[in-house]
Amino acid sequence: MTTASIRVGIDDLAFATAHNVLDLKELADHDGIDVGKFYVGIGQTQMSVAAEDEDIVTMGAAAARQILQRHGTTGIRTVLFATESGVDQSKSAGVYAHGLLGMSAHCRVVELKQACYSATAGLQFALGIVARDPSERVLVIASDIARYALDSSGEPTQGAAAVAFLVTADPSLIEIESPTGLFTDDIHDFWRPNYRSAAVVDGKYSLAAYLQSLEGAWGEYRSRGGVSFGEIDRFCYHQPFTKMAKKAHDRLVAITESPLDAAGRAAQIEDSLTYNKQVGNSYTASIYLGLLSLLENAPDDLAGERIGFFSYGSGSVSEFFTGVVQPGYRSLLRTEHDRQVLDARRPIDYAQYRALHEHVEAVRGGDFETAAQTAGPFRFLGVRDDMRRYEAREAQ
Ligand code: CAA
Image 1 (tube, rainbow, N blue to C red):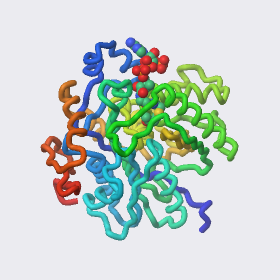
Image 2 (spheres, rainbow, N blue to C red):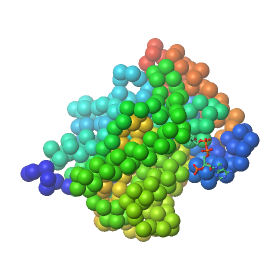
Image 3 (cartoon, helix red, strand yellow):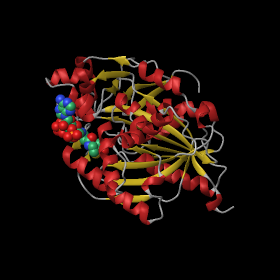
Image 4 (cartoon, protein in one colour):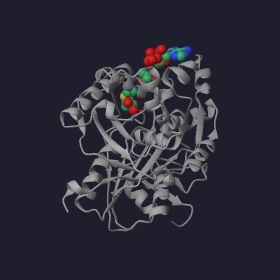
């Protein structure tokens, strides 16, 4: 069989988020500013906030567990864990998740890093593995806790979530098409040196860099035979905050000289913003949370529609590619469950949020035990003898 004849893509997609939620009104009141700046100006209403006993491993495993419960582990010989907020300089967060999920030892597990882009690297690598051997299935996990300094301008654009998706031949959700456009540029718009727990960011420059990358990636996508703007029905962008997706889409409309009016532009992205508005930035997971939001919140059946994806990771690497929604995809969605997960988060006030933020820095570099705050399937117990400890609350 030649690779050209194999249809490859995303067969299932699940998400998890953190235990707590902060309404951005709490932050606006603390800052003494009009909440319209957050609700409307950056397009965010809430952000998920991690409890002491959860991290990227517990969220990533909670997302992946839903995939494995439905599909089993047979044929999964690769787990790719994408994150900006890695928990170890050497050991992959994916190996912790693999252990918690009780997966087969006959598996390659690695962590991928390039700011918010690396889940897309995971997707593209997975497509290559499946195209070479269609009996293989690849589990991609993207999990992040977006963290900026207290009282900084990036603070309202924090958040936390994980997605997991299964890449297979003959996918049931999205077939990924082959032309892609790439754009890499060695810049400092957002980065995080090893000694810091919160990102360093040049906010205004990062917005400009994102838009410039979109132009670069789109240009290469078209030069490599990608379809025209008019042949794409919906768009999913990396969403550090949802207004960024609107800015990006406006830019793409301008570049392509599309005659779409404001309502037409909004219709192409609106449903992809619903979950991210409530979760905040989830770095690597953000664009795929946008995809889940689109699939679960679009009132129409999207089968047959082509989605354009723009994945951006500061520093920077970006990619434009497309995928086609598959017939019958709706029967695979977990819409009620996912909405319930968002609604079930524990509301916290500004003081509780600040204490959790400060806790991360206070325990860095030493042994500690976490307080039991969550009720999810996996818990982060703390660090003993420099080793991270986790617990699965029930057998997997
Ligand atoms: N009502 C309605 N709107 C209001 C308002 C009010 N009362 N007050 C202000 N606004 C609007 C402003 O007009 C502005 O809108 P436009 O951008 O459409 O003009 C918006 O609210 C934001 O206002 P400011 O630009 O004054 O906000 P700021 O200077 O405090 O910072 C930010 C905004 C740069 C996004 C900052 O939050 C930040 O640095 N965030 C982190 C960096 C980031 O997310 N960059 C995105 C690209 S990089 C990337 O994508 C990778 C990644 O994940 C980080």
